[in-house]
Length: 250
View 1 (cartoon, helix red, strand yellow):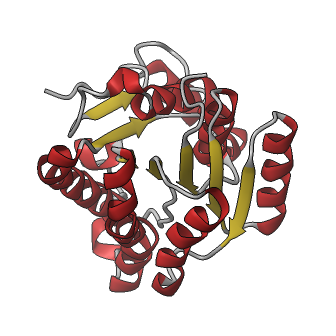
View 2: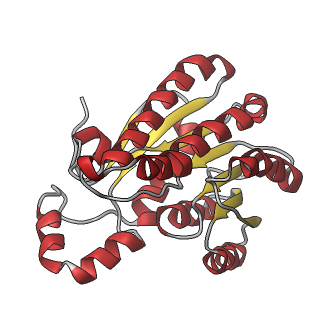
């Protein structure tokens, strides 16, 4: 129970990697307020967490609406009285070539990923100072490797990595750890793509040294547990590649 008595705020917690993190946190004793756009998926995940004995609360919200972001931190304090862990996982984007990337496509990526990450970090800071808390943000091999047709996503993810490193330098004096996970996992989007692109999927798997996709809970979620726990107290400003060895960061 490495997260016993800890309170976490998780964005994009209704499905995929976010849901996996919520399940992993719940099994380690955390109380969780999580945010998702799809209300039915959110309620289903909330029921799953409650069945695990977790104190869990789902909030339906569109994170591109900046007016709701500070309210999420306030709701966490209202329900649970404190905040120990902030996980910024939610992100939406469209994959098109560089020349076909419009300002609207860039805005979608930054408004759903970068700005919520930045604003929630800022709004959570007073409470994380009190708890000497942990922040876990999400990067991507798309930004690290400059993957084709990922212009808006890569840009926003690298911007998230940049502000995470700045915060790690500035907030270390408060005992706050800020780290980044760059995952490769069997999210619903990947599974849907697999069903319609079996040959391309198999070629992708062959490029992963461990020859498999990560599991949203057991691989990505457990890594998030580690970063959120006291086991990672002396780690900050780092990008952890949880991608089966696909990208090697130096």
